[in-house]
Length: 110
Image (cartoon, rainbow, N blue to C red):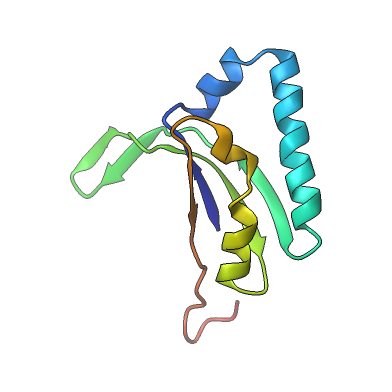
């Protein structure tokens, strides 16, 4: 799983962008996906918006910088990491990408 982080929320970025900027950005993402799909299986995912954080003590403001996700299945974690180094999300100020490996639960069918 890939989490896209940004100092600006996904909704904020989309609200401020012109239609031309949205189109250009999506073209970059699609180009990256199409090229990366030659060596990995990619579920493009969606933008995400922080809503709230639920804890045992109740609910509080969610200050998460996660602004989207994708699911990528590659040959190895290194192979996926290498694909992400050229990802267009990284062009945004304050952007980063987290790569998380999904683990199977012993005794459970995947």
